[in-house]
Figure 1 (tube, helix red, strand yellow):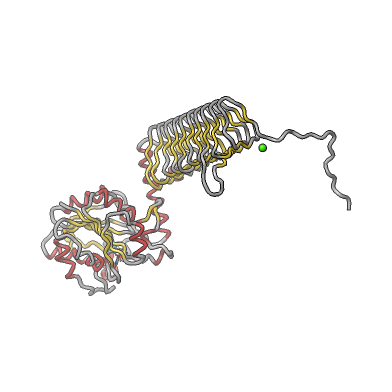
Figure 2: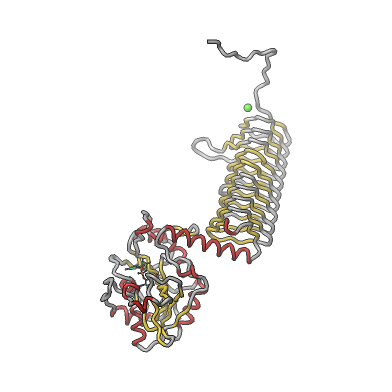
Length: 454
Ligand code: UD1
Ligand code: CA
């Protein structure tokens, strides 16, 4: 049966007190709505219909690359009214999952379970038993069967004692949505068109309403303010940390680890505290990350040790390399095996061959460095002439002396050596020594200036 995912995302999110529409607020580095869309895609939904209202253009633009049907709900007259807006584009057959842009973490497995449970009767929902049900719609059952959902504001004292609540997530056959939604009324305390009223309609039609509960409570938690956003972020991070540890990753402290994207790890990876992983990252067997490292879209091969506070973005790192502390590998960095990059070394758009080392205070930008080179402390590739970028080529087995400025474009031939303090503007031939510096000037018995007496 074909599945449609309907996402309600028209809410203003006043309590966030933000310029940004609520569904664009980030959780684990991605907009709330992005999480829901990702899950919908995993379900192989035939189509995804998103109902937007506040911040419409911003929201649509953010997801321009996705195959989504956008339906506007200009005035927010209730959850039932929101889903009514989809009727002109909603297929006649198949089944719909109704989700929320501000309930970001419902999991694929839970929704698959809901689809399965709902396949018989054509209507099912996710409910939850909670300590304090205040504010939620209550699930009214008779002889165990769901009869209706009563909103908190419409509920009587007895109904308010019910601890099973409506999470708002449903699975309903499209034929039934076409049949029921036009019949909703707003004859209730809030004067809204309640989506929840379809439950009573289903009962009238003699249908049994399936229900499941989520494995993890946070799956059905919504975000209304920044406190809830932060709380949900923590729960999600804890869950991700737990999953990584179950896969064998050694997190020194799972409560001080943040994954904002996807991380693939080999065996015996060790991650010290306060590491942040963003985008898509991969760590090979036995990789160690020191405290405070930040990795974005980076791949590090087996056996590499990264010391504290090193920052990576769009970098590829070979096996058994040593990096940091305080190294910065910027986009386009490609390190071979057994490379050493030490403290306060910045690398950008550069290839560094096997066994080469740049251990101290260096900038390597737009450079192609061969194997077994040593780059002296304080060396700078002068890659920028104020308008254009130029490459520095350093062939295999080169020794660059301390504090060199290599003015690109320039090539240092294989086996060459350069003297400390040189500013080199011309190519250096293979196996030669190049030194560029003023002759040492010396004055015997030199007197330093004295402070003038007042
Ligand atoms: C709804 C349910 C309630 C349930 C609760 C779970 C109804 C009538 N009630 O109540 O049973 O326990 O969710 O959190 O459905 N939205 C729109 N357009 C609208 C109204 C709402 O897009 O016209 C969106 C909101 O942006 C939000 C979601 O629908 O994402 C839920 O709306 P909200 O007003 O928060 O519903 P509740 O009153 O909490
Ligand atoms: Ca000089």
